[in-house]
Image (cartoon, rainbow, N blue to C red; front, side):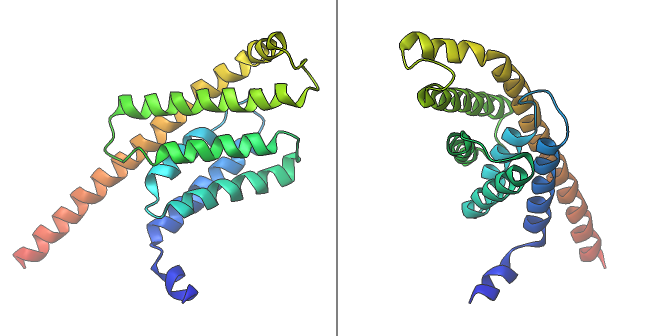
Length: 186
């Protein structure tokens, strides 16, 4: 039964899964500005692209675990993983035909939620900031430069992933239409 499930996964699904996995891994492993990666955009797109939503969650977990094996495990992993799971789930709200404004808006929301969730966890840990309202505000203020980088990279990478998918879909549709037309003429 399992082999039938595996054999039913399309070649395109496998190609997109591997491509996103490699891009996320490289994005986390290669030297970059703090929080300026393709990760948020890739996970938002994955949530939208894969019909079987478990595949997008599996991609997220695999990419984060493998990359964290290399860059190191840390105390904030639960909040980071949860935040990226939220971003994947936000991707469920999008389709390849979603407006560019909606994609940017959902990407912005994902970045904002990541910022609030992960920095709340940093504050709650009580190591860097006192567990007071002033400590929480300090934590959020100190994280703004990281948020700026993530917001910019999430919006740019989300936009890029969805635009590439649109162009590929348009190209394939035109190509298949030409093939059907030529076949019907023969």
